[in-house]
Image (cartoon, rainbow, N blue to C red; front, side, top):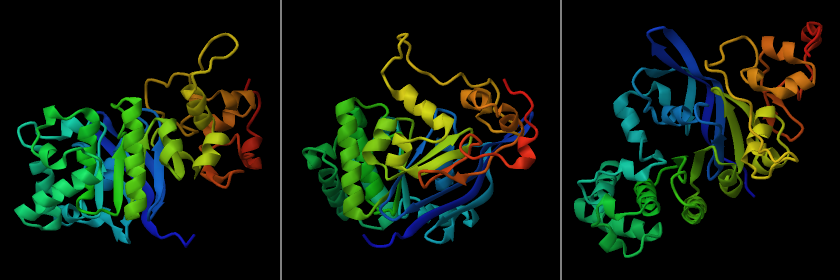
Length: 341
């Protein structure tokens, strides 16, 4: 296998919210890389910051939320420094995105083929007739039956799976280097999920397409991703090769996600769940996961965890983990532990 080619490099990304009571960060010091043709999954619970990270890469953050720091380099170009006109030329042609509710992204008053053709005309500069012909080819490529007939359909005539195929066709039409897939199978049944995942994997191999997969579903991660980055409260807490992370998770949060995704009950008949999150975003000096972490208490390091946030450090799997439980704390911190039980 040849040497990998870096496509996307995110360093120290910070995303902040401005509110009446002040400002706070919802993504902090996030670093992430994706190579050409690689699938990286960004995994976490709802509210962890994964979708905001995806929108930041597209420079499509909601009003009141903004990038406060860091760099987003795509093919060596820092997207944060681009003006809106320059960024418009990047969206679609270099980086594209599909969403978890595909039918909500389609105009109900316009034929689907017309909408996809319009995207091609904007990003590829092709004429109307060429765009319409290309739509039929794309629909065939993504597995939409009777593509010419279906291109004249409206959104209400498409199932959820068919609508997602149409959105994938629209995204691929401009031949982007990176596809961001934000919960692409959440609203679909299991059979259609498998079909969409197979389609994404086929396009990845055919086009050397890099994919950033945003999901909470670890089953999808195992089926598609090469690497996994686990995000909690806006920070990456574990990163590594998919098999290593899923089979031997190092961070207590990752362990909890995997255990809670299982349908196997314990001896008492109870399914595992991670302890509830606090009502407010963690803003203390320690580890953001500390208020929910049972491991820190079991190991007697709760005080260190509550007062000192660890950095990402190399773990036994060859990846990285942000956790004192997997890395002995420095002597300067260890002496602070008196009684954590």
